[in-house]
Image (cartoon, rainbow, N blue to C red; front, side):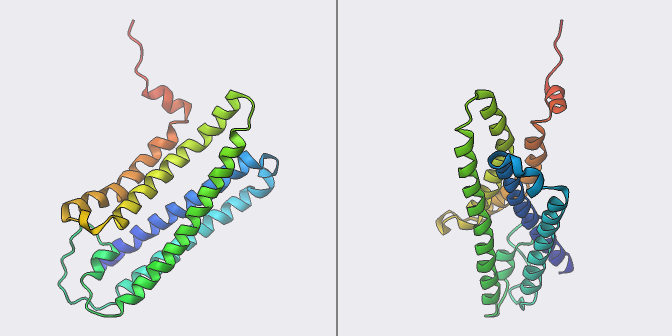
Length: 214
């Protein structure tokens, strides 16, 4: 029971932190491309430290509220989850209390917060692409796109897998499919993050090329 609660807390904490940090990284791309002359003022070392601290603190509060509220519910339908790790929908299925509505309301509030971050990211990228397409030189456009594409790839993978996992129609739901989708959004994006971001590193690019054979 305690292990399940700890697992849920850390899962929500890292998921929330990743999403908030992706939002901050999008703001970094927006300022560097759309307002380059103000970059040092808007995104100095102190501002970056404050935003990172706010992201981690928000993720901590987000996961703490969900974990405390979820495990305050009485569970009377056994202790077997239809999943390979503890997550809120599976735990709510074991609850026999009407107080599960509290958790649903908390999920709705969280969804509104995450949707606001999503709208901010989409709006920022619209502005970024408008500015990039106005750059006269092809080299300048390529450099700007290469700055944004790793972040956009990670964000798209993270969002698309999470949306499919939680908003897919009930007709597509099955234990095996739910298990596969959970692996997709909980394991694949974190595993690909280092690879995607390191593709812009020249040393990594050189390391993945096989040496030529004379």
